[in-house]
Image 1: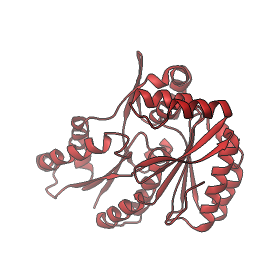
Image 2: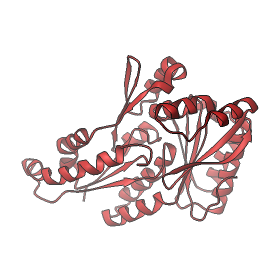
Image 3: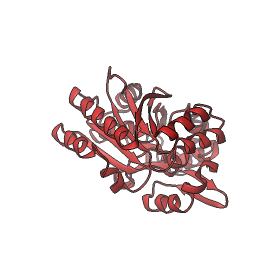
Image 4: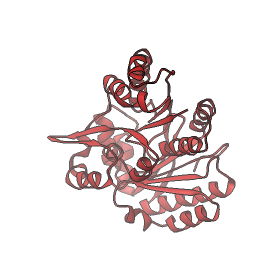
Length: 314
């Protein structure tokens, strides 16, 4: 069985890794004023757009995910011909319409695929599954990497489906934003009242940085630390503890809203990297998607892993 994998462009994994493993990307288009860029996870294009627009006007951006019709057309034009079963893994449905769009598109895809496959000389059935990763950004990468590993190991679709849906329940994504005022301005643009003016003002005045946790579709602050670099150090050290305690998959994903060399210079990074090497954990590092940066601001750090019964950072 030919198994295909699809992610949206908010999934923070290196583009060369996704291309090497034939993972299809659903692009999210970002518009800031007259400037428009379809995010295909091209790090160079993302950084150019970041330096030109995001720092000044990113909070005003509009993000436009693939519509139901665009997803339908992508599958009918290519994926139903190239594969027999496709897993489409999306950013958490609590923060984006991509899951719902893909789910709605799946009904018409399954109704319309037969003549397309027949014309390509294939009369066998086609199936697909839309998986809500229940997380964002680097944390979406945990599920995608596991899907690649299972497919490359020759596992069948039922086992992959069960594993991915279980893994989504145990994936932890932690983020530290640099600029709470930006985060609040962006939240107001999206009618999200999770960051109040008071907390943004206090946090900025006192240089208090929240550590935000994405888990099972919910985002909440689990800790507050004075100073961005001490907060990052605490998060990286916490991740080392979780690695030593044992992860569900041999994977840690990092993403950063800027040049990766800046992230690698942050305190605690070297220790985290060494802990991954010592424990046979694959460390994925990527520039945060343009979608992620316009939503949480330049310079944010995200760390993700999957673990059962893991306590939240506090």
